[in-house]
Image (cartoon, rainbow over the protein chains, first blue to last red):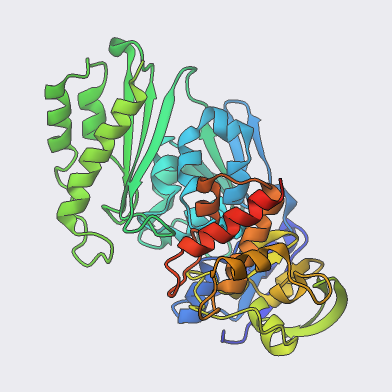
Length: 286
Length: 155
């Protein structure tokens, strides 16, 4: 049983912001697949639930100049059905396919996954490696920031009370870029990622112009870019020696928490190295 | 806070009064007596509470009843026409895919949605559709075979 609360479904943004302005404990409901679990476990209490599914402006996927704008209410099944995502950001398809299960993907939204700020969220490392930005709307208007600044810790974001995430903006990648998302989980059915890796390769065919970006999930409080590894791989011919160096470098400074239910710190560190190498091998194939 | 909502359950239009904090699962089971909808984990992990909402499988424990406004819900009670069994139900019986039966309504409804989308699903598509459903009795193989047989029967 859930504790009693009031429920409103605003028809437009002004109404939504007015409701969210009523108190800092107001909860935003989109897909509900995280919020209702938290409310049932009593880790989240709220006297007021604001269902934002009536906000049409938070729906839809489309290009705006050089960014693909993805509405916060886009579900994981919507991502899987999007030709733009499939063509330009296939790593998000890899991630959406393993997010939850059919029933969860039907409800869970990209915005909710971002705001929930789970260290191993399926969309986390892909959006970090894509250098996505988020648009946030509040009583003072809207503001924008890199997604890496939006996440501030486990379950913590840069949202102020009364604010709402409305869109995720994904910059267009240069033509010919490739991307992949790989993860380990305990079981083959529905499970959260024990550890995950997202990789983008720009100019895969010409090593001197090649740029590689790597982000890791579930190894730190937030999805984490492996910037030292990126610098090490940039413009280099990929040799077995370079990959061996990468495997060491990517583990440097990583201290996954010991209390994880899904995998030991040693396993996670080993696996980010292995998954990154697997992704590179897949993406650099001619 | 009370809400009056309109929805269709198993083909029957209705208006019901619900409290904000009631889940769709509680509405269906406790208020409307569709006890084929099961509460397993209550956390969206097990799939026992799966129903179809506008044709798509969803977890009724993770949806508020008030969110079902203007939707069409199908529970296991509404699957078969008349007194007979739906082909999927027949197939589950034939393959011995039911033991304690607690997970069965969720599996069958998820399978119905799969076969509606892909009348002849691949093995991989069947496994994906089953991915969020737990069964502690059968070991899954008979369930897989039942869905596969129901899929090939439609050819």
